[in-house]
Amino acid sequence: MTRVAAVGDIHMGPDSQGLLRPAYETLPEHADLLLLAGDLTRHGTPEEARVVAREVEGLPVPVIAVLGNHDHHDERPDTVRAVLRDAGVHVLEGQGTVVDVDGVRVGVAGTKGFGGGFAGRCGSEFGEPLMKEFIRYTRRCAEGLRTALEELAEQDCAVRVALTHFSPVPDTLAGEPPEIYPFLGSYLLAEAIDAAGADLAVHGHAHAGTEHGMTGGGVPVRNVAQPVIRKAFSVYSFPDAA
Image (cartoon, rainbow, N blue to C red):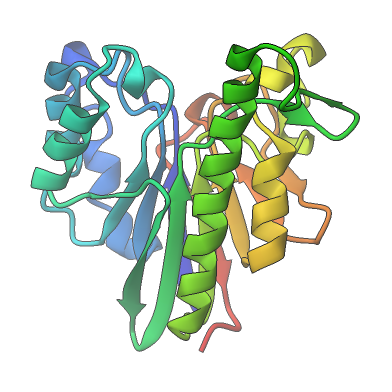
């Protein structure tokens, strides 16, 4: 059985050092890898990134992450990535990575993603250059996710997980004001996941959302924002993986 732990939106700062470490040290009892679904810091500063790094460094399970919008706020995402990678975290953006779990190849494809909305109520590449670039940026994120998932399929991964910060579906946003749905995710992410195939999609970002959802193609989606799951991590199992 392959067990995937996931959490997002931990929003760590100097005053939260050590808050999650005790729970993370129990991970081998519960899961085979840990996914971090973005918004790991409050403002994306190097100091905050170092707090996160110390929280996960040296854990006995692989740690895989994407960044979130908060991790970009200080406009130093490359520095945040570097700090986390120095601590052994696999930070993804349009890439995938493979973890061997007792002979089972588990592939994780990741992107931060972006907004734009969902079918019937979404932005389009029309009008002002800024609006066009908004949607084109989301599309680039989605295309990177799709390509990474396809490459994982070619590597004979028995389990494939799509890891994003923004949501691919509106289901897991239930509880948030409908007016802000376009800023919480995009249907383009779900299209990419369905086109390439995945066994699970996890995201964060929607603090007042709902944990369970599904893409139109039937891929389970889980909102693992910590304010939603209300614990250090949730675990999702794949008993048929081999």
